[in-house]
Image (cartoon, rainbow, N blue to C red; front, side, top):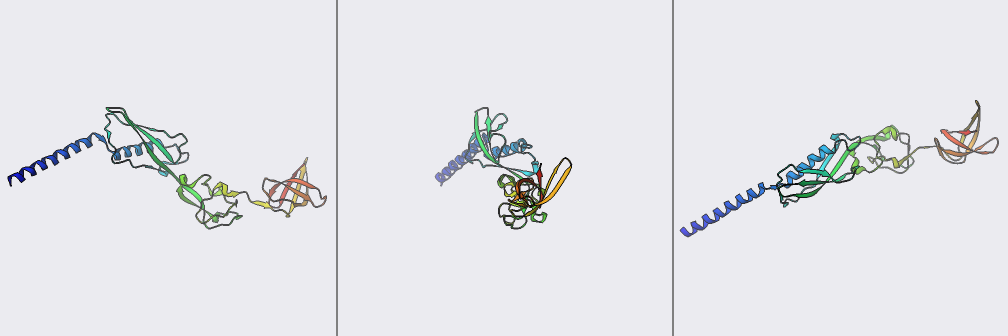
Length: 242
């Protein structure tokens, strides 16, 4: 009985000593979760204003989890942080964390930055060639980092434009999806206007090509049968420069 009690005391003493050593060792290392929190705070502060037109409330920072087994000596001075990714910053950035003393070390911590905005999306599925109306487009908050290039934030920028491809309901309208509508079609009868020195002549002609406002197309004058280059100025109307 006395022998068993003696062994139990030894084991208990060893367990207490081991736990105390572990607790002491933990006090001498930088906890991974604390390092992660510091990197997140640093990015939130440093990136304010880096993304043009993005308010602080429209930016979210997600720092990658660090390995829980990481055993970095506790730093005697404040840690130094530096973004190593080149400007302009994208959605993925890397932060270098430095400790100078008592035992120098450096780690690189990856993070993701998502920016959000009210983006123009189609309110219903629309076919290629559809001309967008105010009822066809609405704004929806979404990640601009994941949405790709050419997102539109102003509905008026797309209203009246023609779709170059089919879009499904809720899909963002990108600048690459739209073009100015063709207001004159090949074979259309158009009003042909020519003016010079204050004198304006108006006649009719036949469009030999499709055209959007501001585009040059060929038009055949119905009276003279002459083919001229004319600028599309409005639906069914083109102007000849003399």
